[in-house]
Amino acid sequence: MEINWGLIWPILALQAILAVTGLISLFRAEPASIRGPRWMWVLIILLGNLIGSVAYFVAGRREA
Image (cartoon, rainbow, N blue to C red; front, side):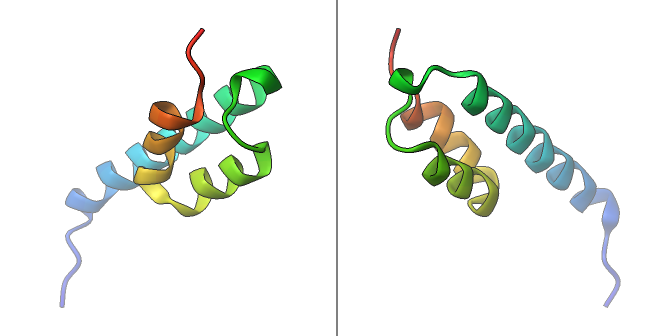
């Protein structure tokens, strides 16, 4: 079975970009502006793949 890397690389790149962006945003945010503990969001972002990063941006940050 041949793996078509042309289809997989964009998904992996998107996942990496979202994870790095999510982690940077998480560590720059004030503690009062985050819903839940930082360590929980780090685990969700890193282990949740694409959905973990999106979940942080949608539900993890409080409104200003």
